[in-house]
Image (cartoon, rainbow over all chains, first blue to last red):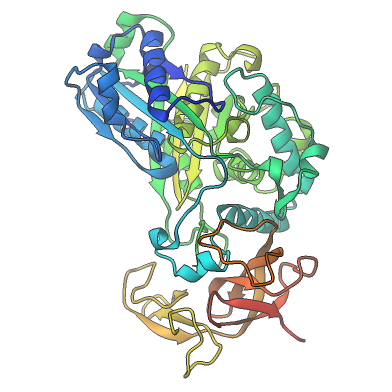
Length: 382
Length: 123
């Protein structure tokens, strides 16, 4: 890592439950909460970055926040929207261009699955017409092969979701707060074999904002800042296996998540064994299983001897998705990545309430993965 | 109507892909450039038989549009990637019962008037 240290001095989040509020209203609420948390007025922000996938332009938030003249850059980068906004804010601090920078991510999606069009993805219309352009199919195809290669059982997939709902029940801002056990999850109806209905997250709503500061400002503010040691975004390399691919190359697929995680750990000067709490993209249960290994937290196949024994639960050796993850919070595309960072910040500050990881966690990690092969990771320390 | 996915007079029901002249990376459907090195790619007729690399079953009707259900209405169908000897895994609709699909099984893949379709290979 080079340049100025970057500290998270303020973190704000809205409820992720369905309400009538617009995405922009949620975003304003999250920004005000983050500023209040930091103890800074909006006029003190020197650079702002943010975006949503489907809920409007972040730079228009200045009409509600105040017309201070701040440079506000819109980011629209699919599942990496939050991560990309955060990286931009980090660069602004590290370069010395700003001593207070804001990153905000928000979204609000209609109910039901996402609705991609073949032409937008450069695909022949036949893939849509013949029913081969369905996001959930890809996740099923990937975990099906992974289970075959690495001996993961369907019950382990159900246990990932069981944990997500259990953690969601402890999180007052989560959308899905009713605990569900593995048997109910397995019996909830097959969507795409081997994945059942309750193993998936759903498109939802929510907003998150983070106030980043340089060391000098953080010192003046006091409070309990968390150091953002690394924030990186990567796109896929040749050899990866991604959603909406009419073909894929042979061999073991490369992982953009592995690339992003490795770079984040290198920048931070830490490794997976240093991490006390982490948030991993859990679009569905299988994703969390695979991302545990892709991000370096275990060997491929080792999940089968970790997850069933509670290792990824709040009291386990590596708590994963302590706020309920995407499965319990839903997937507002622009907000998810920053939700993960918000959760780690609260855990490292010891402010996570009923879902607080015991033993004073000192280091955390976040990971987003999305279409068409993009990943954003961060490493944070107390 | 003939398109990049459809069966063509000179190649029959075989899939038409491409292969890089330099690094031998094969792709489907055919494309002018190599997805790995960006060099020129040449058309190649892909093998008809391969093995099933992975599969799943579409248990609910996808959104229409773009999905067009069969005239008799939606029924669950299998989809998967077929690995061909040219070193390419092709996404295909599987005319294989969900209970019969198995990773590694030999399958035959053909071009028709839509996406590639695969059936269990005899033998």
